[in-house]
View 1 (cartoon, rainbow, N blue to C red):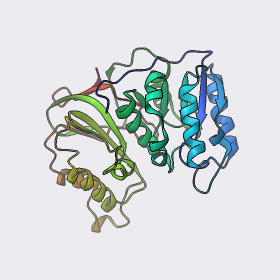
View 2 (tube, rainbow, N blue to C red):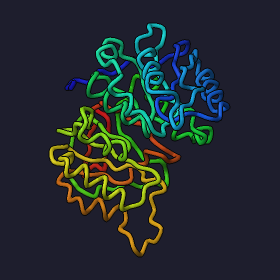
View 3 (cartoon, one colour):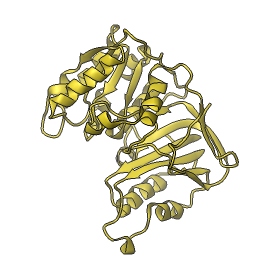
View 4 (cartoon, rainbow, N blue to C red):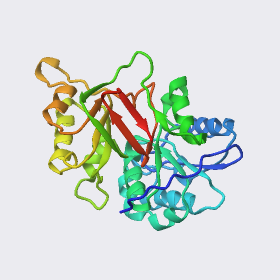
Length: 307
């Protein structure tokens, strides 16, 4: 696995970008049209991958087709950036079919979130390339994205200055549930995906890293199970710190018969600095994050920053 992370060049007007669906299909093609139009309005030339308008059950085409999209986009000298249309399920099925040596030789901007966590983790660790945890442009709710969300996303798409403090949007407070200072490469993403990769060649490496975790649509007991799976796999033993993002629609059916997400996290007895309720995940507004960048936590300064 790579220890050094290379940051790709930012995108500029006139660059060609590639749309792909590495996971679930986009059944409503107006969402593909919207995504392409959105990127064209940003000044990019857009090329669609075969997966954008293909379905194979709950996948956006078979594994070879979707992996070919990724490999083609990174190999092409004409393509400068890659945008994932949506998450869902299926990205982990591609990991053994991706050419990481080729990606390392052809670094370029790559973004998405949710199920795309599998690709972030594998590309960061196997190709040594920084990737970007951003909203996906083909999701139905992306058309309602607010200024905070768009500003954070654009910060990594086309701005050379990605460093500095991160902030929650107004009205959303985070808190340090474990005090202290931590510095490390930022890794992580969707909890379900991270847990599913444990025991594989692509499981998350958390040693000396700051681990970001978010989730959507899972009941608290399932959150408990997956966090404890990561704990028992040693993923919190040697990390530098943890950032808990948004847990969207993760409420219990009966609050009287459930632990809260915060109680579940406290029960992990983490021995590292931990930030809770960073507004990033399956929510609006949502921040974006550079996966593979060096991050810093400091409870005394109430600070989460990219350095």
